[in-house]
Image (cartoon, rainbow, N blue to C red):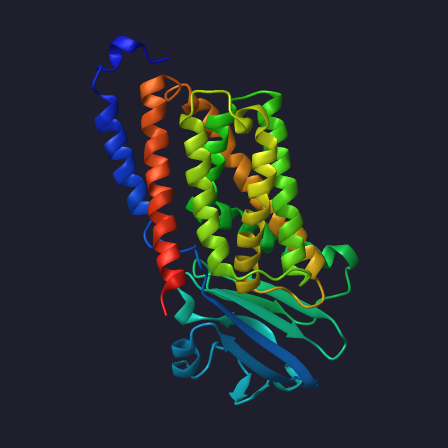
Length: 326
């Protein structure tokens, strides 16, 4: 525990300024954390012969990249078919162009037997080993989807600074105990609901207004943190968490749809992506308890809240201007 004597009386202002500068660095760009996405589908039309379909959210990448993969021998790619002969598609698919990039590549391979291999490939490991036709394994066949989409959910929440600031502001507003548990549960239920509805096509909301409103939600919760009186948000924080959680769910859905979903395993991918989001969220809330004691004093706490609110306001203005731009 840090005592009052260890913190100079006027030190909270420079600390707050440093926090603000650091958060503003995270705020670039001021738009949502969009993900570049691409997909490579290989559908077996004859024994060892695949129809190749390549698509990217980047038109430049799609037009300039002659072939999206380096295929294993003896496979030969003659657009739009990949011929692998009687050996079939076995070996490593390499994606040199993907190395070091932030693009998510979905690889979907389907054989004539109806079996299917679906993986999400990232720049950190730009390759995929295919061991031939995967055996029918029942629920075990969902393991790659569980691993990939849980990881994508964790990455999404940890790189979504607007979502992180909202969770941090909520913790500062509520404190701890049952009230925090109820608020986090309400936030989880709300964003899970809209994430599912938007991903399954039951609700459609434009992404740009959602991103602007998400940033504004951080500003509003920070404002409630600064209010000394007993406001409705302090008395019923779970209502605020649920209301804004609905908006954040739409934000999660826009990124998940940009990544892509396996056609035959949409519910499983949706479930594990949401699991990843929750794990990432818990990974943020737990350390906040340790840090909360450092910002619990009035001046220190207000400085952190001001820094968070100013950053969120910067995001809000930038996203509104982008929304109004012709």
